[in-house]
Image (cartoon, rainbow, N blue to C red; front, side, top):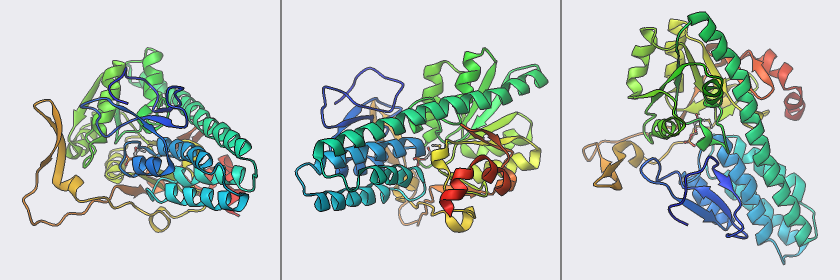
Length: 372
Ligand code: MRU
């Protein structure tokens, strides 16, 4: 599949591509727009690993649909063989990226539903139904996050009596979920409510997911400004930022948060200047099995080429350009952890929650039970 009309949903089924799952190929954004049909577990794992599909919520949904592809691949197998094939598929999908908890959350939900079913058609039917449920839940959760965050923007607007300046980081927009986004959901809701807002978008090197957020905001007609990452502290210090919304790739039961590299520095600057710092996430991103973010969350280290090069558009062509001289070693940690005491509040589909172990346990008693 190639150039088609731009849409507002990252992952979907298309009757023209039976036995496949369609995604926007985010590797070519914002310089181009391409959709692709993913027709095997291996292809879905590769799409997640190479970030054709990316963002914690979106890769969770992709893993859910990946397990539907696994059920298709298990047709004709004996029950025990089908079970081990499904288990292998879940392992493959989960191993693609280590930090976002949504991957294992979705794959394990599918395993709970599918293992032991000795009927091909029934297995496929259940896998597809659950994949669609996971996708629908993601959409509903993000919409609700928008409503909860909107109350905060509305209050800020009332207090300030002017345009509210919001800073976000990375892309926690609809591209990182199925629709709406988490950090951007209140922004879209404020636009719809007619509240004047302006959004500062950090570039989010090395992969410049901020450019994806800028692409989203431009398409939505929302006033925004794109900045180099290192300008952000300066703006916060000068009082140019009224509030900060970021997403999350994993939140622990203490309220510690792993998000795109650079989030921690924004939280430090916000704390120093007394700017409210909110972490927006659906409950699929809460990990019942982790508590201390520094100790318990594995941080993905990615290819150094992402640091030594930048993707750019030259003569209409999207290309990788080297910015570093040869011979210098690089490191590329993709995420960092912001401790809960630096977070003003957690915005979830269940409501606004203080970032503390007690408040998380109170809002998510079912997660406490799952942790054992
Ligand atoms: O490495 P990516 O692009 O998959 O990063 C994940 C993210 O989109 C961000 O960390 C985001 O802020 C989390 S919200 C889904």
